[in-house]
Length: 116
Image 1 (cartoon, rainbow, N blue to C red):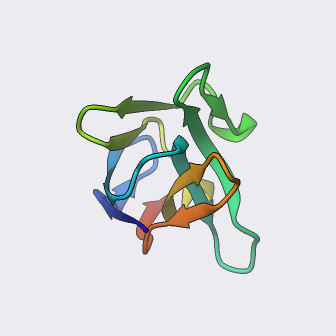
Image 2 (image 1 turned 30 degrees about the vertical axis):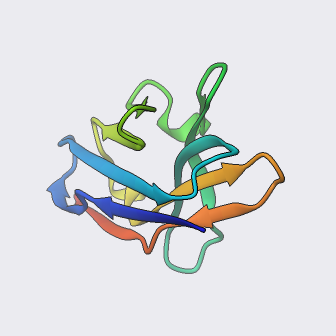
């Protein structure tokens, strides 16, 4: 079992920045990717950014150039730096970990609200 705990959400004005952090614990053997998804009210959960153990990170088109993702394999953490935030970035952000079997793990979510 894998546990994911997010931190760093909050309220920010448009144009501002926030940094989300996720700490993973438990049986992390076989985890080959970590990242972030988000879900806005009335919308489906969507990928924000995912970084595999090997290879390049993948970003949603809507956040490219504004968000960066970093992973510390020694500390089992993944961070999402969000710059130039827009009201449409408002959502609950979920930390995500994928096992090589395809099984997905999710954090409890953290609210990000961007005011106009």
